[in-house]
Length: 265
Image (cartoon, rainbow, N blue to C red):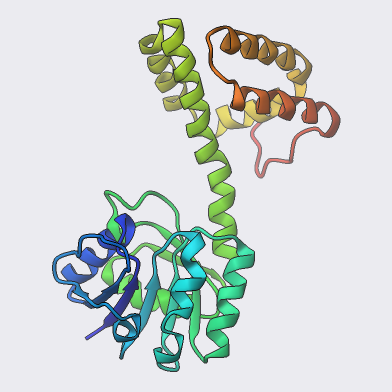
């Protein structure tokens, strides 16, 4: 039977652990925090006990806890086992984690979850890199996990996730700022519906025109966004994201925009 140790039983760790149990996997979990133990998970109070005889150890922690997680039972992880770090850490951190694992003759996989875990659990689409990436894929794919090994270099998966986060987390922040202003202006319902309409219509053509159009019209758009900033200030909203947009547009005036792969005319 496949034996998995899970470090971190927060939201993501609990959902993934519960799905592993449902898939017939023997799961031992460790988390020093006062969190609920998923049904079927053998919760232990000693991380060394969690990793005993485990085929794979999954570190599902915050980035700040990634080093603590891998080091807390390092001497007890058997040679040849796989340590998979699922934290949202930088490529540099992933490389350091890999070095720690390799020094103990442990395989390492940098695993990047590419969308939210709630609603997906174990089957959250993922990328894996590092010398243990292929091993991670071979273990998890039969369980229905949509994971792709992209390279044997730790940090490559993390880099792709964080590049995506520039847009996804930035987009969320932009929507929040716009909706705060919409509420202050008394038209939040209209604004919300308009944003939905614009996002639903988005495709490669729209995205390409956004980028290329910004290069063509950057000067005019600086003035437009200066007016938007003034409006938000009048409404009592700190225009954090809008200020950043203005600075970004000014940079486009100097440096242009990046090339777009297979850009549509």
